[in-house]
Image (cartoon, rainbow, N blue to C red; front, side):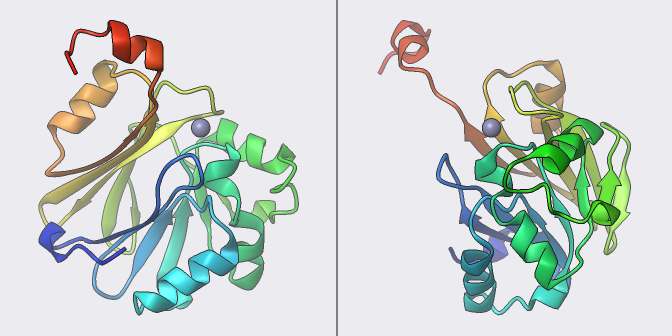
Length: 190
Ligand SMILES: [Zn+2]
């Protein structure tokens, strides 16, 4: 839960990770973004407060894909504060149609093109496609003051694009699916 100062100049915090919800904070000292909001808005507000991060410091919400464990808190959080939502167009479509997210204001939607860098609060961000069954699933690569950080969730398989993103990351946050049969039959011995 603690802020990881070793990732300097990034300020990074893992609020939740795994199938019960995903939510990360990535930023610099005074501004930043949330990557996924798959826990309740109330939990997110509590975790931000615990880490002395005011909600006004959140300049964007980046969504990796539209599964509930990545978007649960989106509607209530954006009701409290009109934070722009960045995601692949297919994911935004999924959010607009999703049971728990269909009331999210589409005016907050910002489409990201995979491998096309954009900037939020001085941090260069690039989405890259990952293999997952969520709509428009992407990971995010951050570049700030010459250092990089990559977040990839729900990685089922390492394809060429993901391998390249991992190779160029100074810091890597990875959340991976596992399959018992694949683990048992895989190349690695336990
Ligand atoms: Zn998923």
